[in-house]
Length: 410
Image 1: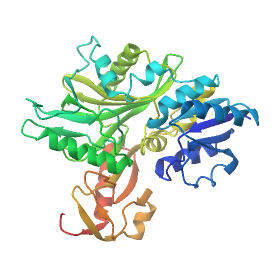
Image 2 (image 1 turned 180 degrees about the vertical axis):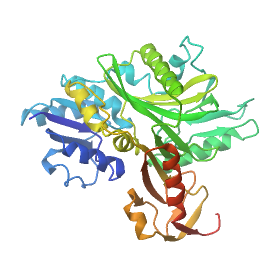
Image 3 (image 1 turned 120 degrees about the vertical axis):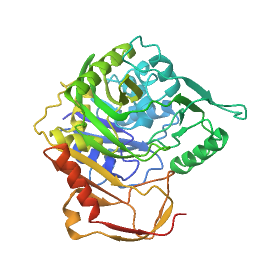
Image 4 (image 1 turned 120 degrees about the horizontal axis):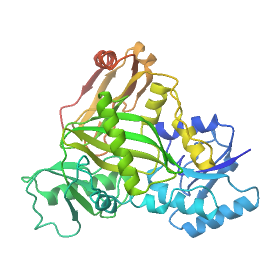
């Protein structure tokens, strides 16, 4: 039986990790996990305790040594991979050490693991259909920093849109950066000061284009349309799969993504590309060397029938990747967010709501709702229909059935 080491999954007991482990458990392979040393025990339902390695990922040399000892006492791994943004670099190095298929470091550091290197390389693409942006690096003294047009500020290395917001010429940039650093510190439990990027604000609809590149061949899973919070923040609150765009727009997105992937020389990697589409062309916000996060992979499963996790495993085992679409559903996944700070006083959920696909209460009565830092939905649900119009109608009607009472805005 093939032995597979998964890096980073199991760090937190959340929807994504539980979903990944549930899908991994269904595969005909022997699954092992490598997690940071301080990770709590909660994966026994999915993984035998003897299959969990606890490692210090701040010391890759020590990590590799301990994995080597583990393999010496049992058998080598046939694949080493990750589904996590913050472990892509480490996984590439570890997989190379054990002669497994790996995502090249040249791909990793031209992607979202380093947003500045990515943007500088992206802006070299010679194609009028691909929109470019101006970029400034913000680090250290910001007293003399001024902008003359709307821009987006984001941490040089971050995730989950934390610390990302629209800024305009009338905004105090210094105050924004202070707040963003505070938000990042709270969310990721870190005290380090981040460098930031300022990029031109590109208006338009936001999407993710997702898939896998295997031996330089691109396999597209599909296009997901994002539902965002109101500006100036970019909190992702939902997904629409397939995206509500025309066949012509879809073909343009895929054609543009092929050009971008070829320019970057990406290979042997899952990819999650966040883009803006408007009348001027396509703008790549960023691209990650991993499977889409959050609920998106689950959305693809409900819409099309394939399991994204299985295809990622196929990539790193050297098996053919294939996103076979056995269903053609319209899916809307949405978290009900409140866009202000408040206390949740009551939440009236009818019993019929519990039957909705993937329904879950996320914020309990008595909790404080934070926005935008540490923001999470009050509840999450998915609707499945035959058309976008029907799915939207079902979504709107469903939210009317749940009553939320809050304190005054804080």
